[in-house]
Image (cartoon, rainbow, N blue to C red; front, side, top):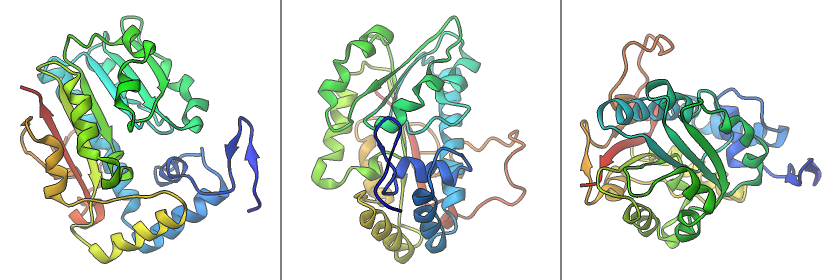
Length: 274
């Protein structure tokens, strides 16, 4: 495709990770260049569609568990991506209608769809802020965040399929640590992260595809993902493959045959700040 820009200055000349993810989920908010790149990934790793689906399912389950069992009423979701219903606030507010959610992303593409993230219940509140996880201080001091979240009360920090886009050179553990330092006792970290553990050669191909598309990635081992939870109290079952973290047998959309760990290739966990 020749260099083009869609309305709003969105670059459609190169594949974009958020639009590729939308394609994996069966969405419609992507361009031909994204479809081609996503299909290249799928040719190397056919499980990518399962991985994307199980990532969303983990977010839903983790949100419900934190709302029902741990009294969480506030969420900070960073790396929101293109909205896909049900969005986090819809899941949270289905359990606790007064839930408050701040979505954050540094991608102008997400801003285009942000109105989908603001359809709150009358009792709750949501907002979207343009912010970068690499600048935790600016994100946490955003006036829009202060208008929605009370940082003196527990907040769930939701980092779903985000931190593999933060390489070691960008200090991923320091970033998560600084975000958690700003949250009080009783807050939570819910995180999912792609891993090469079950098929290193395939995930090297995936790394090469994203890098060639201009998106640096660093997929991490179970041990490295567990480091994000240092100092937190992990909820059972600890760091688990996505579909194995508190599976919900009542979800009728789940396939009859469970996916394999290699298909999912996603470490997930939820931890509570003491």
